[in-house]
Image (cartoon, rainbow, N blue to C red; front, side, top):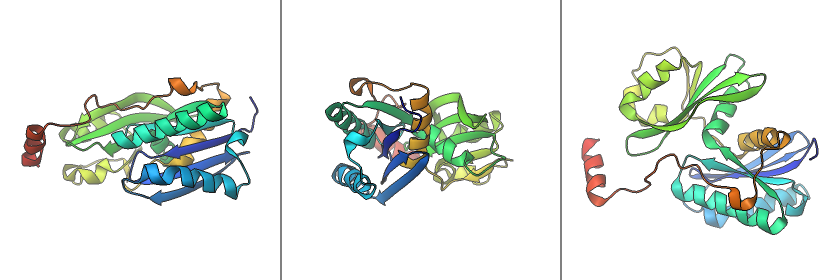
Length: 238
């Protein structure tokens, strides 16, 4: 393994499709708001970014992807594309958690951000959340990605005494708007391919890579669909 690998990273966990390259300590990113068109846009965006840097897929040392949690379909697309590209090019894969990437982005440029809660809207009046702490420049996981009810999120966050809470759950649940808290709110912040590439670099240097067939999404929620009756009940409760 080289000290300065070339890593390709991408994320399709939200309505934004993003692609990044880590090249010798520099990270470059391209992103587009694509809605549900990730399967149409991801590969052309990868090709375009590689071409801009005069690279081929064969030049990359490994392929990283946003493993989740996030959109069920988006996670499947990212994982399957990473597996397919890595298998064809004979590369290793680095799955990176989206909440870890969100926490990394929250820590960047904020010296006071020691402990971060990453919380994003999971629909169905629930949020995906996790807790990270900055230690020696790295974001260490204190609480793994989990699913929490909207009504419990404020108390759950308070329990961890964070400096920063990042993610769209702060905007998705109106009850959090009046929550009295000492933490800094970053509701517009989201994970993307750039912090995924940064975390993938750390994983690469630590030897944390997997074979293509071992890569898998991190869904967190066991069930990804509701019955008609369950959807009606959820709508009536809002």
